[in-house]
Length: 426
Image (cartoon, rainbow, N blue to C red; front, side, top):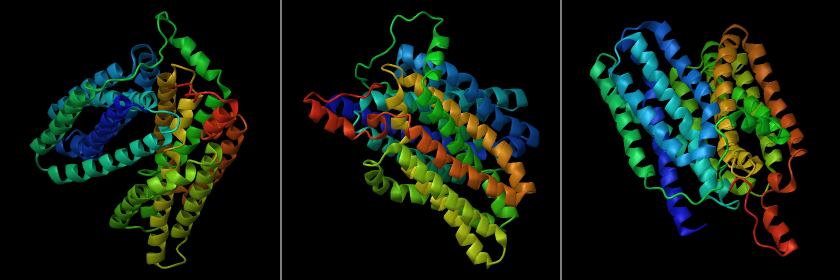
């Protein structure tokens, strides 16, 4: 990695941390703000959360093509401006229409930030450093979310509208400040699709859908996000409170255990997974999450003490965190290695779209199932976790040796007596 690439990467990591900080700063308090502080009711508050998901689903298919044609940095700057406008207007909005339009702008901007930043990491990293860079990205995102939520919680007062106006104004200022930071990034010359006709967006998707390994990874990604991330704040928390009798304070402890596991284990896990087959690392995550669902099932059986149930439930979230730490240096670099030269933006956006779909469907399925049929809920997602292992091993048969074992790139180069070969996406 050159000095210029290193300087760009440091700014990109700042961008990841600040964008996550902005997200954690306000999103946990959106429901209270809309329903209670603005007095617009639970229905409007629910629509606001739905608008976030819908806005992301609308813009992400176009974001990938824009990144390919224009580069990730201009797309990121446009997303930051959109998010800043959305945040500021949300803090000033007093009607349902204004709140929904502001939420759409904020949701669209935040959705596009992630594939743009991921593509910048691909462009500024090498095949040897990419796993570590994505692990650091995930670490900083969780740190930013946690710090943002903590500070935001101390600023808001549900009896004062102006405290929320201040909250959203600070978020807008963070995004505008991030524009100033990212505008100084000097991106290396990355391969792009130049001179393509304006109407070829469909052909880009056709090319992606023709990549069988990418399609299999997308299916696997949907199951991963559906069975884990899509359950955190919906089905699993509802199951813990309703069936396992977990207190709200214990639920907070479980969420903290998840974050703590990621922070503590991330770089220790990185050393372990860097020399393992990516497909088998993902398969191992499925097994770990299966154990997590077994622990959740034990928590809800009611045969032990409440202390044992709480410990089992907290362990569930901690085991999910361990799996997340294993995935962060694995999934995103694999998407980059599957992308043809110059198409990393399209592939990153497609995978972000899959994630967003899973995060939209997960709570819609998991929440009602956990509330009405807690035992089948646990069994269902235990089977989904085992399905992750099956799909990962199946994907491994589709990957090339270098895609599944990226460290072999060096040994192949040495054996062939050539210069190091960079990733197809980089």
